[in-house]
Length: 599
Image (cartoon, rainbow, N blue to C red):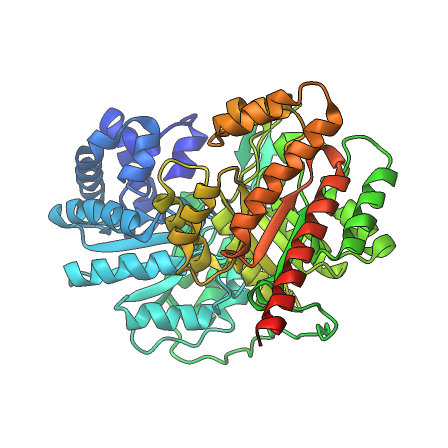
């Protein structure tokens, strides 16, 4: 439907045409029926609240769906079955829509279609198996009409979460799907390849709706190119795989359907086939025996200090490496490196991390933002980190580009920090985002960011729990400047399963203090702190001493509440964080000596 309307110059909400141009939609239906289609689907793929709201059409859901069924039935005129189509919502941003939101969204559209007495329900283009399972259960509970459940693949033979297509189909069959199959994304070749590993179901039938080809861009428009004779041959091969319902998805025209219909017109379905054994086996080739214990274990067992040292904004690594060496010598557990913090370009934190590791022996923790890399780049970056032996990462959203040095630059945000955490943990299982085996399992320890500088701390803790559910191993907090706030954070997070490194950043001047107080969202300094820093005036040494004194006071409060301390080095002034690291170690030494004396 979309292909045909698009080819006639329509480039807007296709579902809205049910109301504004019903004759155009009807003509498309009739063209496919004339080509030999026994079943047509309503023009309702995206006729739900989530998708229609993008066009301001959320109030027209009922009218759009009802009109779609009416048009399809009129076109069918008892010559073809009419199935109500409901498309998947989730793409690669799994966290964009919760299960509850998807279920509410689905029920509304399902009930409208069922009330219009469609012959069956077609669920199509579901990349996320969890979403498909959720909606299929709802549909099966609400109707005895036949249900077609079509999933979509990024890679041949495997679903997005790594589930084999065979196992995915068995799951959908168990949940009551009458027909299970594939649609979209792949052409006939890869769909045939995928089905070679799938036995003929015993309680359902197989379906397949391939794309005509991979799309090409021609003068700014997407174009699909595929010879109808190729689809004629493909239909015969689909039959050999036991497929009983053959259709087409993106790029397929009535000519493609006609070719397939004619190819199988006089043939009986296949009831037995030879199933190819899949070779998608994850082999673990790397030896992780030399890996350091994960930081979430380190901080549970002892006092742990990690320090952020940002890579320089200009070329030249001498001062950075001097700082890395000094901090390593001071006994920190890891050197953390931000990923272009405040959206300002710096020397790559991966390059800086490798140099620091090689030249100073420091353990490096690499920050990864969602801002600068799309889903392809993120996966490539993770594979590179693993190949270089980097196991410690912090998954964060990243400051938006508009606040940095180049406000016109694009922020990518293909995924959220929640999705990135899940992706990294999926890599640890040896599976890429598309479900394809990586050939090895990574061994990442995943930190997540914690912003306690919010009005409602309890809501921030809910986000932490959600990040834990996505796979976060431990948390690193933004800097705090209030003893009471540190205590409040402890009380609110004491029951979390994942440990927290509490953030402390020494102030360097009154100007620095005023900037943080007035321009950093959520952070407010007390009047006493601001007055103390202001009193230092332009005396840099006095300001340094006051900043250290304030930081040490905060450390004293955090010391008995949190095992992990996260020190942020301001402006590459690593002498400040070296002194604070020594202060923490001295306090720990004194505590140990008191325990021995007490015994």
